[in-house]
Length: 400
Image (tube, rainbow, N blue to C red; front, top):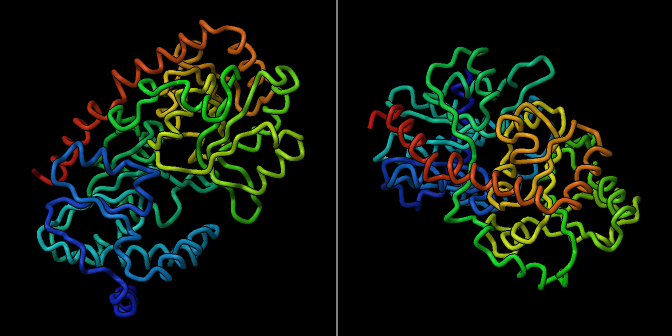
């Protein structure tokens, strides 16, 4: 019965799938995320020459359909959203059948994995899931759609070592590996950028710059903050009371009305430079990282964040500047207190503020933490190193 439903949906949406895309390459990477913001597919391209990347928005002909999918995807996870993801997965399947010269597909996150595998049963299509967002419910289990993808994928690349260990043991996965996000220093290297460019642009020559760069992730109905950014207004307000005009705060994230109201509540809205999301290696963003004195990494107990290693962790490390981060199991797999970062207890705003004051007072400590973080990037998390592991796993799964 399920297959019949898929066939009906297929007939409805097949006219909306772009068939004019060049699909002559042997391995394909499909992502729902803007590659300019989330460049993980570039790592795959470095690892394996000839990989062709596709952004789902470019696969779908209809802008209205893409807009509708984008809006519906913002609703909380439910049975409706489960079926929405199924429909998106079928769109990916329809696109995959146009790939006449390839049975090898890499997909960022679960959407499309189980559909491509199920509807291609008669062919030898192999799918690797590049697993960034591991979503676990209150019972400690993967949500239904993710579980289907985990059980369907021929291989899984985990971004978090702790989440990999948990999921592998719980679901008895055979083919998997751990490859963190890391950084491509050829594409993103704030250390080699003029550290005064951003300061001159905004007139901040002598300011102590405290920066948060990252996403906004909330529970859609309650507004519950998953990234821990609702602490920022209180942190910034306390710092401003202690340091006054000597400090400036920069926030590089999407506009968020809840965060905006909190900044206004603490009367520090005019003390903040708010930069909306831009390309990951845009000069303005690279310049910001190069000019910052301290980079803040907030967190929460929401499992996909609590156990994650976080993209921004590696980008912060690549800046060679001091990082202050809340302790979580995922973060502690990458950062060590007083070695390559200053770590505080999760949820302790006063400890974060005291840590930043300590870093403000101790330039040598800031330099030491930043230098060791940058060395770790070069030795362990640069893409020219991670690409070797990526390539080996692709070869193993795709038999190349």
